[in-house]
Length: 77
Image (tube, rainbow, N blue to C red; front, side, top):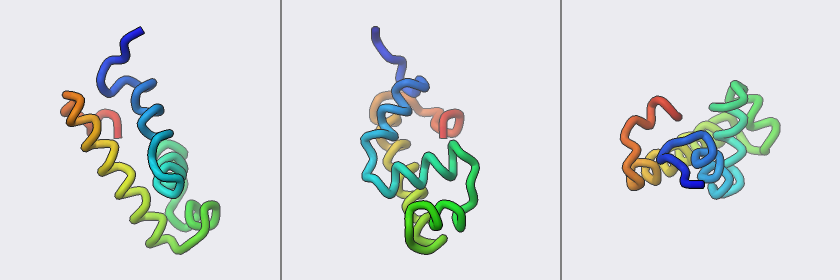
């Protein structure tokens, strides 16, 4: 089966490939809806560090998806 760029399966595969803190921050905040203070409590560190990890993770996902030809990342992330 071939995955479409930006498909749900591909996005989850790319999220799984992120460094641990980025992966957890993206999953808890962007997909789970938790605030950064809650994310920080779960993964350790400060809310600012959790925010940075989520930002870096999303930036990495966008870059990878754009490289694969999916240019409407706001629909996914």
